[in-house]
Length: 138
Image (cartoon, rainbow, N blue to C red):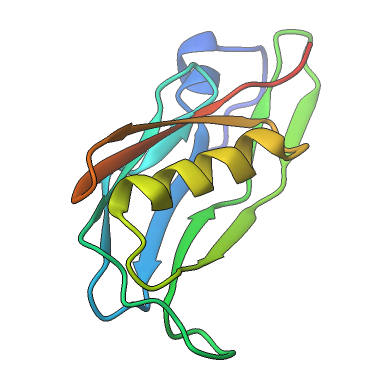
């Protein structure tokens, strides 16, 4: 298959984005991905957290939840290519931490960061969602 060269196609470029994956290393708090792509065009990636955390006693990966946003690139209307770095976010859980507390902590971390992402948390203590959007600064 021959690679196309040429101009900017907004339909193609706005559909590009980071793949969202998630993993739980906690005994009682789980995470799943409901919408696995955070697009340049504004489609959010969504992860759902369920349960109350067992948490962690010491170091290591046990008692953590992890979100990953993959590396990707896209072309801007002016023809330049933007390379967006990946992001691995690990959150150490406290014993008894609710699902809503977990997604709020992820959202606060993402929103305070310098990466081109913003997040919103919603839900209740046992089932909560985080929606992550791509927000390139102009």
